[in-house]
Length: 416
Image 1 (cartoon, one colour):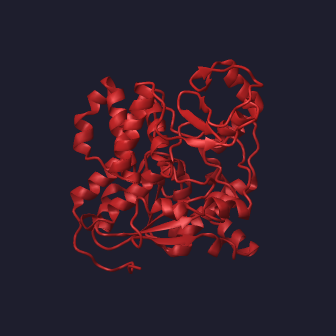
Image 2 (cartoon, rainbow, N blue to C red; image 1 turned 120 degrees about the horizontal axis):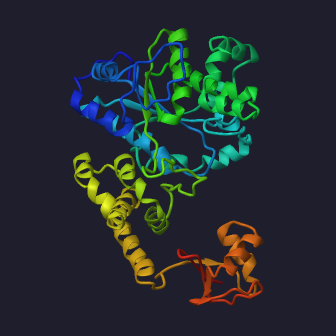
Image 3 (cartoon, rainbow, N blue to C red; image 1 turned 180 degrees about the vertical axis):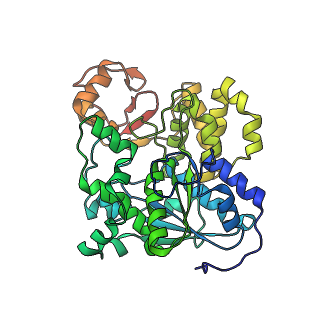
């Protein structure tokens, strides 16, 4: 691991600023030391300070990810791509640290939630994080970063330790958080454990004596708690880099699971293409900028065309992203298949199988869409189900081996 004070050749200041501009957007304001209410995107304490520090010594910059689901999605990849940038020699060759929040995931981050998260069990967390590193390796090269699990220090804290740590943060500071204000306004409860979550995330920085932290701008509050704690307990100024979120420029809505828009790096090439082609047009530029490594000059040059020819640029975006995570051959193959099925209306060359021969169709459809029989019947009533290219609405229809079952415009299964 790099020493905190190890000198390095002067990094290219222009390149550092370009990396900040690409991933953090609005460069932010100087931090008011006793306030955690600044939710702006940016670099703290300032861009100039960060450029000076990153250009003078090697730093350890960490990203924390709570394994609350099975996959690394495109929202996670934005800070990961920022870390990939700072690995480069011209940015100083800094050392990323990935913290898997196997302890904090069991508590639940209240960020953006109108009610408390359902706590996860230790087994659920372990199951979720089984394939996390393999997915991260698609972005950060093996051996280029350190991996830590915050249960290794948080689970060893005594109640006395927690009380001492809590004495450094006030209720007034916690209550300034916008989503807590929203809950108070709507008379919804706030669990005391939800106040402790930013404290735990903040202690990650203290324990590791970290130089900097990167995360989505919805994590600004939590990251600034860590900055404040590190200053108070270690007399160290932690850098904070808040990356942009994927936002539809037309509606202002961010890409999220609740909006049906999450795309994972582990998605198959075909699924990835299908999901990207389905995103609203307002995401196109943001996804090129934040989720790919396409040159910014190219993105700026084609900005107007992305608005007037969204279909063509979605295809370009889909091919670029599938190439990043599966390689050029699969990108070409997946795009050709998408054109065949969705532009020309032909059957896919290959499709997954589903056990369903001799079964009532509603049961099989419910399994495919991971829903209830009621939802399956609704799809049948809407004419959204085809068997061997014929619309079927009979709830009790039995499937036969070899039938081609199509649910909606994109999902095909061969019955076995």
